[in-house]
Length: 157
Image (cartoon, rainbow, N blue to C red; front, side):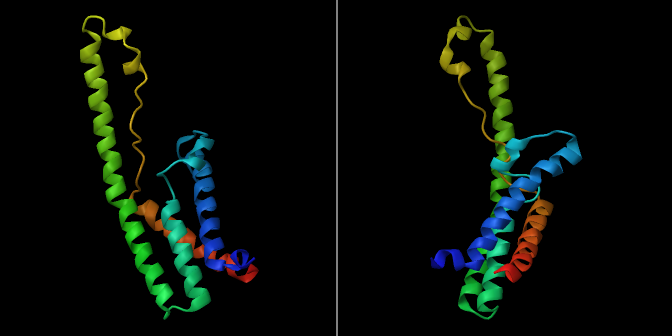
């Protein structure tokens, strides 16, 4: 199957797996918290989005050359994804922090109201996910790891 011979695809997938898995020991070293669930969550160091698109672009550059149209498309795609990871998604995460605090404040206010505690639906609410985007340094190291993974995997291709 030709799909298994697509080096840029495999480089990108390997970069995603690497970036997601390496978040666990990084968190352990920095905060002394062991959180295996980080492998399946968004946000954190390094950015798996950045690692994936950087590995994809690097793989395309290695296979097709940096003067190819496909490399240009992949490069622009990577820039947009990395900008989004550190901009729009990060801002959405910061807004989620504020909204979650508003919900908690509202809950304290309403808890004093008569019969409010008997309502199950309120107890079932879920907090918004706050860790959506990335700090610029997380995007940088995600991109760097993607490029390195593509170059390290290419000799095996």
